[in-house]
Amino acid sequence: METEHGVDGIGSDAAAELRRAARTVEAVDVVESADGVALRGDAESVRSLRRALWARQLSAERFGQERLAAADASARGRLVESP
Picture 1: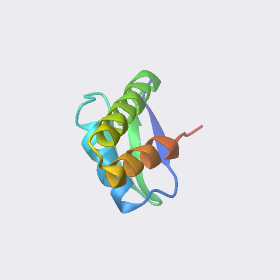
Picture 2: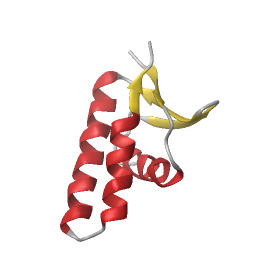
Picture 3: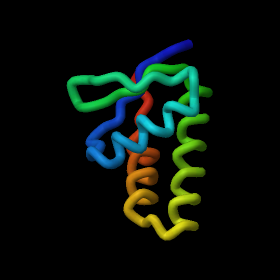
């Protein structure tokens, strides 16, 4: 079942990383919301997006890109499933 997942208090760098990671998960759409951005997709797709953000974070850390890693971690941490 597709639902909307809020991304509360996300910064611009984290929002950009969220959009980039969402391109790798076909069943998730990033949409504009009153609070900035939100995701549309089923629970499994959002879990896949979280894993993609984690993989991006680890890769950025491995290559010394701390700002990028922090943005990926922030985006992953801000995902909140809406009721």
